[in-house]
Image 1: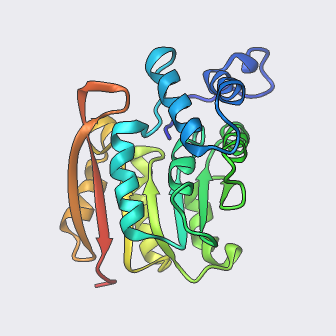
Image 2: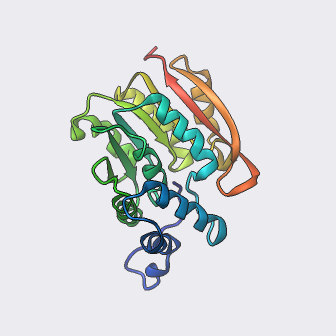
Length: 230
């Protein structure tokens, strides 16, 4: 997922936005009900036609591994964008597990829900619209959840740390929960990185990798296990 300037749906050229073009391409090209086909279609499109800031296939393997190891029942994503990482996470969830994705933009959320539904994952993945800073304090009560087992942080980079601190403050995470951060080098989230590497609350692994669809541009991801509220 990512943050780019969103065109409002009321503008005449909103139908030509790159996000809507991607959605149209997925609906015409990918196999309905097949998450792998949806992911491969988006990856191919973003490599050949229009670069877009999904987590992508290279970093996606790191995300996959973290999800499989965590095997979450209740997962959270900060930043849905076009729905790519929601599909990526959702396809690995066990029966009865849920992913809640928080997305600031109503336009992005509407598109992402269609991608998620097309991939056959609407029963596991839901998209809430609004700032994560507003959604997080009431997240558990609104969704009747005891805690969150897994978080993928991939929204506005300056919000990584404030929103992680909110997750801590409201005891949304449990001991053993996993927090994955994307775009740690580019565009970069240095305060978030410092926190997960130095706070006694986390055990963090730093993964050197590359920016999505740009193998010559370094990036990194963090995978942090919650050790406790120390």
